[in-house]
Length: 122
Image (cartoon, rainbow, N blue to C red; front, top):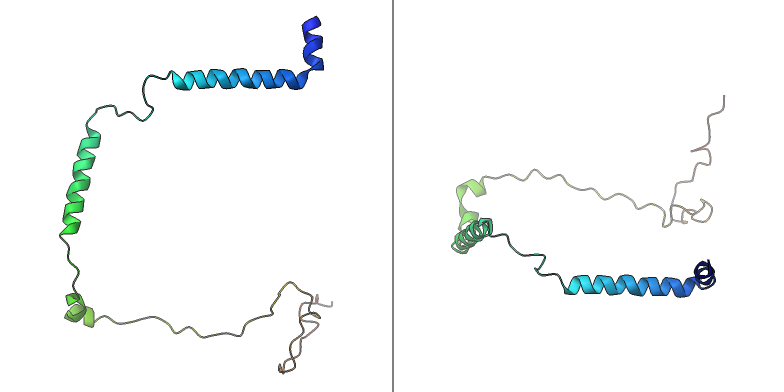
């Protein structure tokens, strides 16, 4: 029981010693591992994937980009169906500020309706 009393009185020292022992065990384990973690298994799948990658890269290198497609009749017959973006007025600078703090400027002709978000009267 004498050992338990010593450990309970010196908890910090016991914790530091325990951490050092675990760290030393981990270090020894990492230093003595015989094989690297990323070793290949030798199934040959890496070789076929490498060959496919090299084949694809050589095909991409043979592609040349000229501007001839822009004069093609098919390209010239394309139509633009985009819609015009209409600019809208920007809201208050701080939408979370109280309404009195961000009252509209003197150039605005609209007045704020105080009953705009008021509950309906029954």
